[in-house]
Length: 64
Image (cartoon, rainbow, N blue to C red; front, side, top):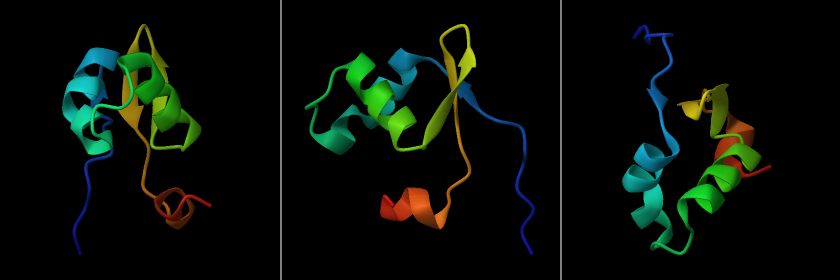
């Protein structure tokens, strides 16, 4: 059994954009990409323009 580190990895809007913009063919700007990721439940805001990934669930993976 693999134990995962429970400490969230924090990142800024710009870091998230640099990492994931190509996933959507650069069709979204930084603010739109962050909003979309929050809306779909992939990330949450940790305050002070810092974000973190949420645990992957079946619902978030399938978009339900």
